[in-house]
Image 1 (tube, one colour):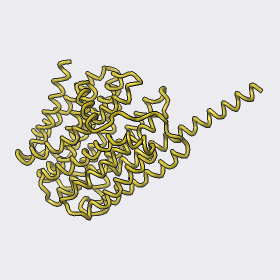
Image 2 (cartoon, helix red, strand yellow; image 1 turned 60 degrees about the vertical axis):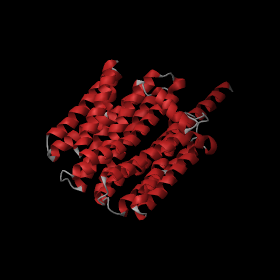
Image 3 (spheres, helix red, strand yellow; image 1 turned 90 degrees about the vertical axis):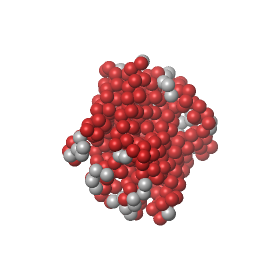
Length: 397
């Protein structure tokens, strides 16, 4: 009788583990598909489409920052939405918001595109917190690191597939907007499967209660290495992605080649994170951060000195920049995880993500203003100065 009970219990545990593994796969599928539609295509499509319409750089900066501003609103609103509606409904709401905004944006006047970018970003933020909190909440402690690493690699696909799809479909019409909405909608299918095989965790996801407390918490924690590194990375990445179409266009590079270069940026962002993480494990986050900063400055200087660089050289520099700049966020997350105990991990990760998002709102605004006042070279100067600031702060530590 005892043996039978143990056998039954063992079978139930194995079934539960299989269901959890399937849910993990499904939730990773949600992130992968939604990331392509909500970020990979969208964050390239908005600025490139406006550039083709000869919109001034400062207006492109405002619309691009709207994507990040909407994301910040979504990040702050997600915990309350999860408590009231649950994880699945919060993710569904995020997907729906982005789908509606992407379908309506190309048919509304350009002066209202900032509303489209805000709502698209809002959906991105809701899906980001709702899905990832669910995913990481059902992962065991012994496998969490590997699952997080796999998840970040899958998210990197969006940085490659998004610009490539824009290059193939074009940024001056409906196809790219419809495709972005289609990928976002497709994420609902693995979401349904995940909910069939796993009940979301009952933990309370409440990093902040309001926008004011979110900002206060970020300011209080920004001096720590994790949020500081991720925050400066947010300025650099958002400024480069939003203004690179204008920067490259002034150098005679066509829209198709610009999209492919941004796709190469995505390859670097995806492929170089594992070496950066390995370097952090072997030499420490501090040394890895210093190396990433130096690479960023050197690549920006090379793009400035070689005028104009050939496509092969520019592709190499963009590839390295993609890995180095994305490495700011990767190392920020690693630093936050090392500095916190398990009970504080969720709060630390929230601080890192909100710090990254807030500074990503600032990046396009600053870059667009500098671009208008001082020309395209100011983009590289902004990257160099931001990276140098982090270099100085890290060197002092």
